[in-house]
Image 1: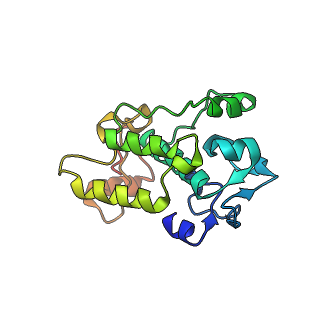
Image 2: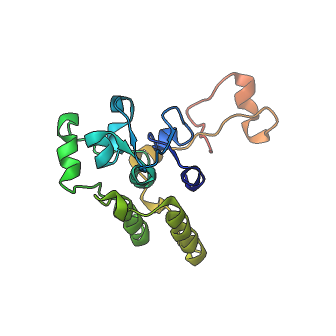
Image 3: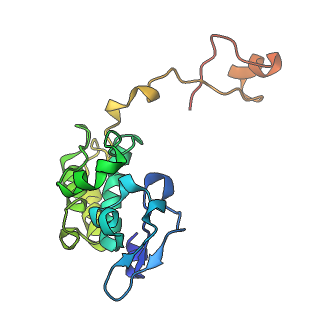
Length: 189
């Protein structure tokens, strides 16, 4: 994103599902904002307040979306603002409400997210600044500290793992020949 911002390209649809999707990307005009009269194509719940209210897009609106993307990573893909009805969403954003990161999110990451969600676009960091902050934190990480605290995985990740059969693996030899798995088979991913 810092590379795109350096080229004055605005993504306008940044989300975990769409990091490399550039269908809505445009270059910024001389006023640092893009007007998109057909905003309904962009993802509302990932969009900055100025993008939702008047279709203004800039590097700073992408920074807002990047903060939402960080939140998605720490919630293992939950939908942002899921309980807010679309018709109430603009007022909700403009009231200063933001997403709540999970308790397992490191404090420095929560601060980074909140800096991305400042109501005034000029107060949000640039992608170059975000890169510097992320680089600094990566260098400061201790051996037992992680970007994502994986000790609090959602239920979806706690199912019993299943091991795939491989014809050359002696431990799964009978599975392949028998044409399937029995109840005692587990998967390792």
